[in-house]
Amino acid sequence: MSESSLRIGLVLPDVMGTYGDGGNALVLRQRARMRGIDAEIVELTLDDDVPDSLDVYTLGGAEDAAQRLATRHLSDHPGLQRAAEKGTPVLAICAAIQVLGHWYETSSGERVSGISMFDVTTSPREVRAIGELITAPCLDGLTQPLSGFENHRGATALGAGAKPLGRVRHGVGNGGGDAVEGVVQGSVIGTYMHGPLLARNPEFADYLLARATGSELAPLDLPQVDRLRRERLAVAR
Ligand code: GLN
Image 1 (cartoon, rainbow, N blue to C red):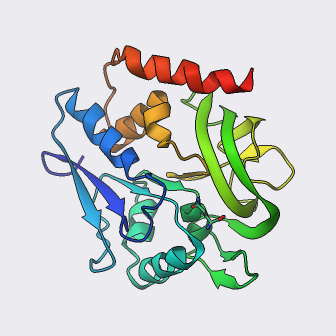
Image 2 (cartoon, rainbow, N blue to C red):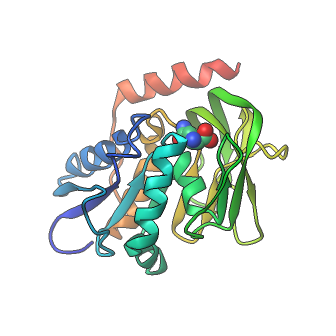
Image 3 (cartoon, rainbow, N blue to C red):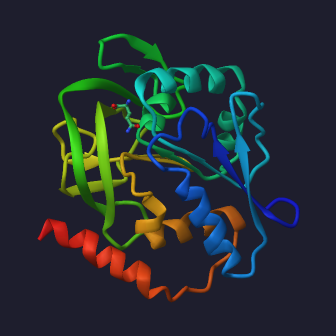
């Protein structure tokens, strides 16, 4: 952890804030503070450079036009790429998977170059994938099912350098026909799960916090979060 406070980068909430994924940064800050760790959210907008010195970064989903603006900004200001090279955890939701890939095709069929942090490409599905999404994680350190809400047209294919985050139990996921969901490549993790993801999946939130702080975290007892999980996971039964 740099300096005395945990610094959480909320990347481009002005263009990638459509789906409420900024809540992931709030959850990280709150769960850190509940452990007595001083934490702050650093909002990085289209008017800002992207520093490589923060402790953890989150990026949210977006519509096609907005995600194009984000792609250009992250390509012109490559701080996120440098942070990932240093092993800093990065969480990329939905459109952000596509932006971080080699290229994506919009729903109108136009191909846009991404920033190649993920060895993935994305092409439009015939029908939009919308609904509850539940997976079994395949990332070491995660044992609990992951739950979220997917809403995307893009189908993401993983190249050899990228691994899936989970196996689909309910919903569509990456949409490539192989029943996998999300992307893991080094310290960068992508998923199609909105929710926000970290409000629904406290184990995942603490996984990122532990990586960002470099320390083990005491468990938190939050019955309301357990109740939310039970309710959301029940859709698959
Ligand atoms: N525009 C992208 C798609 O439809 C991403 C949407 C999103 O971020 N929810 O695939």
